[in-house]
Image (cartoon, rainbow, N blue to C red; front, side):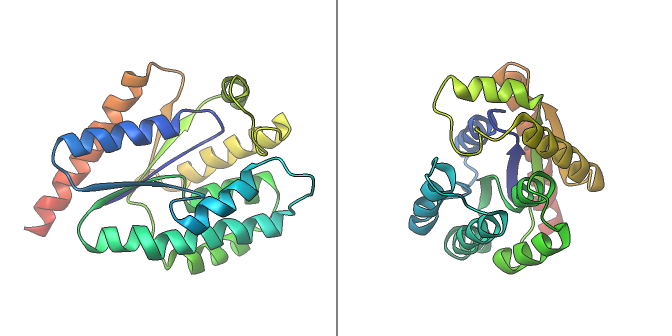
Length: 209
């Protein structure tokens, strides 16, 4: 099973991805945790370029290609091999992030983004996507207490477009997406996520019998 976490900056998705990974491992379920951009040596290098504040601009089309270059390598080196050997894969962000950030946020054509995403993913789609939703202003305030990156410094209108994009994408495919309010205690978020995943994993095992 392929599980992804999505959400605006500072929503807590990385924390929840790590918790789910730990909870599944403690139950003896073979599981791999990775992230985007990153997860491979190439991805980590490009992540620094994309996330760090630079003294030069990166245009939206270049962003699209760089994110998908990382994605193609991650799918080939990590995600597909893990899925092919029966492991569950948890990914902190995936192709939906590109649709939302470069599409709804930057204004690139959604159809073009979906085409490039398809090439990079080889057609792999998540079975479950967890969207941690909250007012982006709250998440940004939380992140600015740490070290703000290039995306954190975008305007609040950009981040509101990103949130709207996430909610629109989630509404298109409610079978895959689960929307959870991020303004809750960590355990109040992690418990229903684990319940959803275990329920779906149980169904997969039954269907394979």
